[in-house]
Image (cartoon, rainbow, N blue to C red; front, side, top):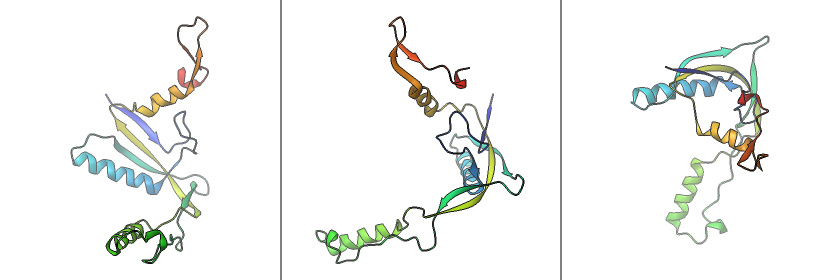
Length: 157
């Protein structure tokens, strides 16, 4: 028995506040990673299909991105923050920072959306349990026997 799950098809009760859409770039990366893990003998979800979502005029989502001039300022060898380190340690610190030299995304770009159909024996994850735990109230039920849960959301149906 296998379950199917659509990723990128829109908001769900389990989404974390975003638009629920996936962009083609990350969908391709997930597809390739799931196949590589499967062929390496690692049990994981498999991507059954990947479809570019095309609506009237094109279907895109705005996502943060890095401009070409987005570089973090790196310290120099005589930076006072590095004064307590030896020259070898300073070079190592600067080299390490250089690898991570991008700052935060500083622009928004339109990216084409995609929908991935994933397949697995089960999609139950700790996040599903956390979702219901967040919705539980600390109040006791009317009989004082245990916590009362907010069952008004459609996920409980």
